Figure 1 (cartoon, one colour):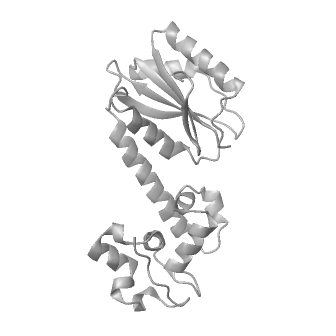
Figure 2 (tube, rainbow, N blue to C red; figure 1 turned 90 degrees about the horizontal axis):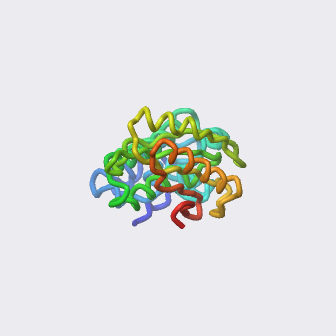
Figure 3 (tube, helix red, strand yellow; figure 1 turned 135 degrees about the horizontal axis):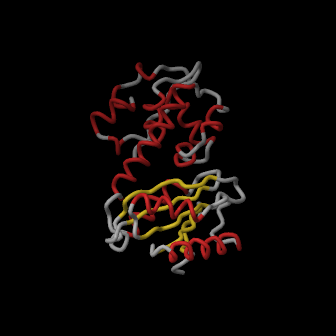
Length: 231
């Protein structure tokens, strides 16, 4: 992927040669021809005093460690970053949310048996970089096709309070015949805690009591994913 040529700080992009301007390059050659910094610069739209949009984008990617780090950054962290006002923050948050929703749309209706990797990929994409612990449930019909993916509980970085009765109630409301439990470890660890293992046993037992199949409990972190039922 070609990198946009460096320009002197403070030089407005509109004065750059046309082939080096991120927006024009994207429209003429395609998005794949634009550097990471160039794509972020298009979202930012403008730079700041003494720094063009591409230079600002490079600084942001470096500050957050990577393109992925920037796009998964929390609003609170973005708000503390020099050069980012409300409009720029809103664009960055919006593009990530659009990606998540589009990815989610693609898995609804898919069979977990036939498309397990696609479903796990979506869950990893949406949860691996979260700074708090979330507990999601994937609800499936009799054919094990995805009906819905929902956030059920949100906790601290250490633990989440999960109530099996709430999971069961929602499954019955949706007419689900099977479920997949998912939670993340913000610490990056893929080792389940005793709390995780006990919670899995409680959830499986609660599902069994009402004839709902617990297909899996997936643990997700920045290091990957792990099954707590099928491992």
